[in-house]
Amino acid sequence: MDATSQAGGATATAGGPVVGGQAGPADPLVPYLSADFPWYGLDDGWTGRRYLMQAGASGPRGWAAGSVDYGTLGHGDEPAKQYEPRETRKFAVVVTVARRDSRRSADNTGTLEATSASSAAWLAGSGLLAATWPGQLDRALRQDWLDQQSSLAWDLADDLAGPGWSTLSLPVNGMPQPFRYRESEYGWVLAGEAPGVLLGAFGRGVSAYGVGFATVADLGGYTRP
Image 1: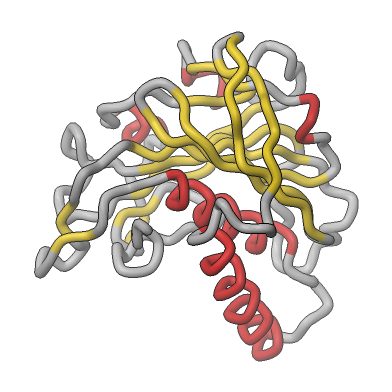
Image 2: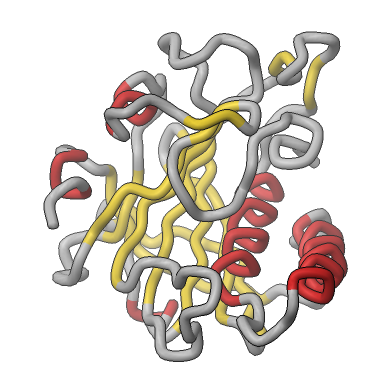
């Protein structure tokens, strides 16, 4: 399984663009436009708000062409701030992961595993945790909770054929595509493949059974209020 979000130094939580844990450029479109793969979002069946979340890279190349390895596009309510209520948030986030045979690590001292559908599942699972952790926990307990749940999400992502997942067929560019899907008390996660990329998604308050995915022709639609 790919180790983008753990060994690669890039964070998988919702927020601004990052590379190797560092803040991204002032223009949030820069990392998205420098990617060498197509971005996916919800298709035209989604009429609600769209927004950029983050893009990440595993190597030390900054925002050079081809350096971006994954990114997320949000739909619906934005993730809650630290102490805002989370139970009422309704959102669906699409995770696009580049197909990579191997990549340099963030510190340039080694290589990372090839990406796979498990990579998308892990990024989606950890993203869901970051968006839904219990807001009433104090900082120490919250970190323990995140560590525990992240370890579980990692194990589940590494076993997409296991009993923790079911199969769900959803449209990608209008064509049915199989995904691995699971629900929890925090929301849902799915992962699969799409033309040119690996695809994941997570959400809460939005039915996964009613979503569809499509390549994003104009990322500007994710920058408008």
